[in-house]
Image (cartoon, rainbow, N blue to C red):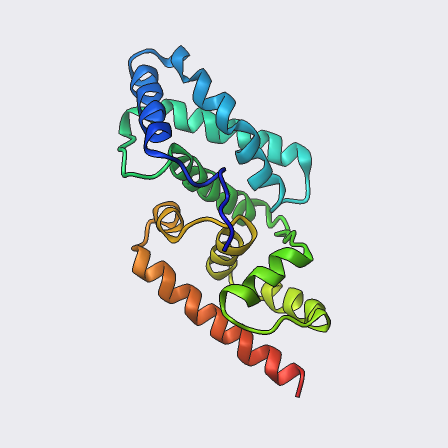
Length: 191
């Protein structure tokens, strides 16, 4: 799996973020550097999963409002602050889908699908793409979220676990089971 600097931080970057967080806890107007750093990634995360740009803008604003008002509850756990923001975004998005019955969107390109095969030491065939997209689209929300974070966003399991509030081992086991299910389904289609 390739390195994605958006989701991987050095110790120095984590320390700088922690200073920003502590400053914002003391003085809310000091939240600005965190907002500026993460607004676009949070918006992209939401827009990639929703049908409407306006809905994604509204929800992004809601995420940052909630983060600012609940910043005093934030606890550093060795992962970027974005993990906490993504957890808020995920929870807000799930509420929107429940209330409005809005249709969930999946955006993946061929390279995202290739990563699934490469990481799991499977041969990638272009003709599998339509079936793989269809099968991924049929996953339940929790499984789909895991696949998106791991393969489409290339997040490390530690951060996925933090966002989904599960253990890292649980995230890996769930991912293994999802991949096995997809492999079996692909084999059935291509027999």
